[in-house]
Image (tube, rainbow, N blue to C red; front, top):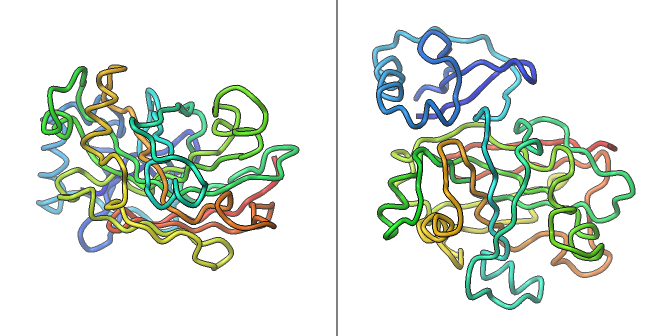
Length: 284
């Protein structure tokens, strides 16, 4: 299923995109799309049944699409997780996943405005596969147990300010947690529709120019290992999100003068089967 949330920011309502591309109202079936819902097998079955029997009313076209998940607990991110991205940035391939966090308040909808921070000269783009957790997980014994905790997948844009991240001291957090730095969606695609998360193409365009064109096959640590690994350092809860890294093609990896983002730029990104985003950059 493709689950999403539509309407004004802060007042979104749950919806489903059916197999014919028609937007359907889920408000009569569930209150919202959040971790509580994802962990409730009965509620998920009710959504599937309503989708199958055609009882869900159609919604009007043109509604804003918000983040597909409400009440995100934490966003765990994996850095340098593609072989080609590590190569382009001159970084050594890590022996274990590089882990950092983004605050849930960085999340916006897939077509919402992204703000270039004040004083920023090095705002960068990163298309990423996001993994959404659907059941509590700690100390997963193996990758099968880890994958059983995955509720679904979404497109994430891990916007990054490279000067703040790399040149201003401390950890990466300052360059990763600026306002609007994690557009998510348009949909949360349930795991049954993604039989192999290591067979997805990822692409990103800036002002119509293709900048990233990769595949999750190139991940250093695949999805199952990332989820298993993280569960040994933190408890993963329903509604947590994991951003799993970006392929080559970021501005940081380009020759000088690097084409960092500026107000007015347009970024579009897509992952096979998971939908497409489009953001116009503006000044914070």
